[in-house]
Image (cartoon, rainbow, N blue to C red; front, side, top):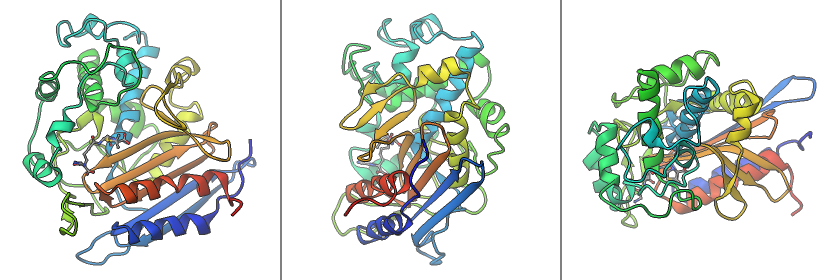
Amino acid sequence: AVLPAPDLTALGGRLRTALTQGAPGAMARIDDRRPDDHTTVHQAMAGVADRGTKEAMNTTGRFRIGSVTKTFSAVVLLQLAAEGRVRLDNPVDHYLPGLLPDGRITVRHLLNHSSGLYDYTHDMFARTVPGFEAVRTRVFTYRQLLDLSLRHPLTQVPGAGHTYSNTNFVVVGLLIEHLTGRPVRAEYEDRIIRPLKLNDTFYVHPDTRIPGRHVRGYLTPDEAGASLVDATEQTASWAQSAGALISSARDLNTFLSALLGGRLLPAAQLTQMRQWIPAGTGQAYGLGLRRRDLSCGVSVYGHTGAVQGYYTYAFTSADGRRSLTALANASNNGEVHRTMLRTLEPAFCGKQAK
Ligand SMILES: CC1(C)S[C@@H]2[C@H](NC(=O)CCCC[C@H](NC(=O)C[NH3+])C(=O)[O-])C(=O)N2[C@H]1C(=O)[O-]
C-alpha cells in the first residue's frame, strides 16, 4: 500500500520538543522509495551534535545504535538457520551443553525474549552514572555477562511470553561464534555490512571510539538538575552482540529496507522473524524485531535502542519501501524517549487530523 506523504512539519516539531525536554540534539532521516522506484530522502534535525564545539546536529554522523544491534544479530542467526546450521526450536543445550540452567530454553526463546534469563543490566545500571562509569572502559567476556545474569533465577518458565532481556542476545552472540568459529564482527561484516555497503556501520568492540564523523552522546544523571555526562567513548562491552554496533541513519534505513524487502533472508526465515508475541499495547516482538502498530492502522517493523547517550528509533514499512531512523543524543530521559517514539506517526501516517 502507498503510504501518505510524511508530515515533515510535525516531525520537526517532535524533534524540537525533545530539545525542550533535555536532549542536546535530535534528527531524523526518511528514505521513501516510491512506486516508480525513485527514492526521496527527507531529513529533519535540531540542536547540536557536540555541546562543546556547538557543531549542529546532522543526519550523516555515526552513532551508537544500542539494541538495534539485536536485529543484526538475529539476521546472522537466521541466515545460519537457512543454511541448516542451527534449528530455532532446538534447545540451546544442543549446541552449548550445560551453558544455561534450563534445558527447555530454545534458540527461538532467545530471539523473542521468552527464555526467562534475567537481564544483568538491571543490576549493572541500577544507579545510572556510577553504573556506567564502572563499566565504560571494562572488557567483558560473554561468559562473564552470562554469569552476572545467572546469579538470579529465571524470571519465568521458558516460552511463557515476552520478557525483554539483554542476556538473550549475549547468548545469541555466543551461539553465533560457536556455530561459525568466527567473531560476530566478521559475521556482521560478511553477511550484512559489506553486501549492503553499509559504510557507516562498524563493530569496533572493545575500542571505545566511534570511527570518523560522529554525534556525541549525553547521559542524563538520575539526580534532577545534575549536568549531562558525555558518554560518547565507551567499550560498550556490557552489550556486545546485544547492543555494541555503530551505524548511521542512512545505513539503518538501508538495512531495514533490505530486511523487510526480502533481500537479507529467504522468505521462510523472514516469516519466522515475523512470528509475533505480544510486547505491550500496540507492540509485538518477533525474532530480534519489533512491530509497532500506529494509530493510522499502519504497522512498522524495526527496533529501538537505548545506550548511554543515544536513543535510536529505526523502523520500516511492511514492504521496506519507507524507512525512518530517528536519533536523540540523550538517554535516561523518559520524556525524550516518549517524544522520539512520536516521530513514527508523522513519518508513516502523514498529516493527522488535528
Ligand atoms: C528495552 C530498551 C529500552 S533497554 C535495552 C537496551 N539498553 C540497555 O539495556 C541499557 C539500559 C541502560 C541505559 C541507561 N539507563 C540507565 O542506566 C537507567 N538506570 C541509559 O538510559 O543510558 C536497548 O537498547 N534496549 C532498549 C530497546 O530495545 O528499546
